[in-house]
Picture 1 (spheres, one colour):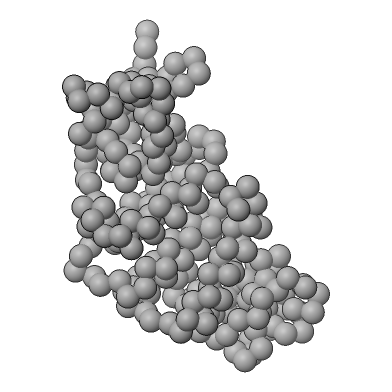
Picture 2: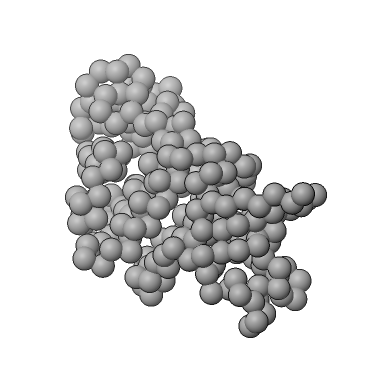
Length: 242
């Protein structure tokens, strides 16, 4: 007897296969990451194509075969219209797609990551909130996602000695898990010197203060620093991504 499974899913990636099939990479409420194949879904006559696509939130049904899962039904819950029609927002979610694809390989239920994903897409899709810096929006997702993967940053005190930080002499260390003081930076040759703005932004991000983060404007030099430490974190925890 064939068992059919149903779950809510956010589609974060799709690839074409053969003449008319597509493989959808989805993050689901019940199973975590799944890769399901939509048979003949690229054909105009397909009944499924209107209800599942990249960056759709859909309820899906699938069956488990010997080697892969096959999509049998899909019902669109939400298409994030404002994301799909905005170049900067679309660029942001494609970067997030790459992160998900690189970091999450196997099937494992993870409600917190699922909730973060849906919440972030809804925030990004909300046209009543003007996002001043879409790169900061990406960092908002990235660092909260990394925190859920077990990498929790220390941003209030030195991650090594635990003493109060001097805002004028602080460094970021992936090895030590956050912001460190000048003395502790001596033993980490790869620590990056940052400014107090970076520490403040990371605190706001980890508090999930979207209302403030979405309105922030930062200096180009601070933006580059934040980009650098995020990229270094990607390289440290998922080198195959780089």
